[in-house]
Length: 392
Ligand SMILES: Nc1ncnc2c1ncn2[C@@H]1O[C@H](COP(=O)(O)OP(=O)(O)OP(=O)(O)O)[C@@H](O)[C@H]1O
Ligand SMILES: [Mg+2]
Image 1 (tube, protein in one colour):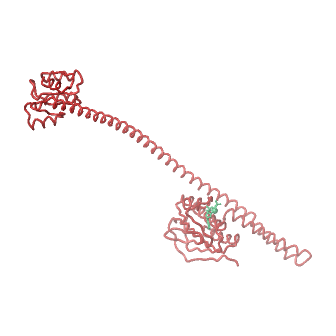
Image 2 (cartoon, protein in one colour):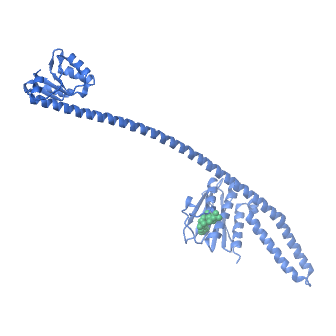
Image 3 (tube, helix red, strand yellow):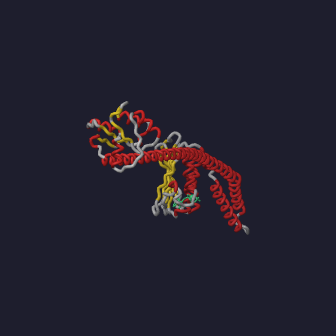
């Protein structure tokens, strides 16, 4: 009643519902939304704190509460403030303006709290949605990583198969070359050698006569054919590789390189019993041939050395030239940024067989390329055998 009168005096017009006790107040609260609740500290069936707790438990936190009491004490005020009241008024201070001010303040506090609660709920919803989005994109990412990993594994397996296929193809090609080269050497080369011997006998037997001058050009042609056949056989393959082993074949390779390209070439073999597997022998031979061919194509060298030695149980074959050199820092450290395939192919094929290629070159400083192939049992050393191949 006192509140009603005070509000009228303060010209605050509001719909006011009165409740004589805690249970009626509770029913009122349940029945309709209220802008502000003013409660007495002492009520017939409990005190204001009980009602406050009941309001809070019922989820009615949003309604601001002002407490009136005649038993004001600091302790009671603290209890109410802790329980979340918007304001606390001793009845002795119940002037119209004070109560109007308390109600306005309580309503503002209530609105602010509602706004904070709404913002909090909205924020929680946003966080929930964002978390769901993040979980979904995380799952997609995991999925993508898994797919890429599996694609990568397939690619590696595919590359491995390709390497194996390339290696087998190279070996098959080399065997076929050897077969044809050996056939030419045995069938044609030896017969030509026989023809040359018989021709020489015929020439000697004929003695000087009217036709003697015709022998010389025929002999020249015969020598040329024999030489060309040797070159052809050599380009096809090295029968020596199969008959006498890698070192002999490399020596012949160096000799033929000098003959074909006119570059001073030395061969040095500092080891023996270098047991390499047959496949590796063939591949190493092909690699040296390709590297020498590169020297002829690119190096413009005056001198080339081919060195075979055993180092730490590995067969090291070094092809060094004093030519123009190049920058080996291209793709895979081998292709030198060129469109060429030779060096890359040599490197990959050797790698596949557990062998390394060490390239040491820079523009203007020549090139040294070493093939390092592990021997089956480490081999044994022997004294250096050096051959100067120059015929000049
Ligand atoms: N001994 C060398 N001296 C100077 N440059 C070289 C030498 N060996 C290789 N190169 C350089 O490295 C590049 C790559 O060599 P690679 O054998 O891969 O290709 P290519 O010989 O040009 O072509 P392909 O071998 O496919 O016919 C060459 O183009 C050349 O520039
Ligand atoms: Mg090449």
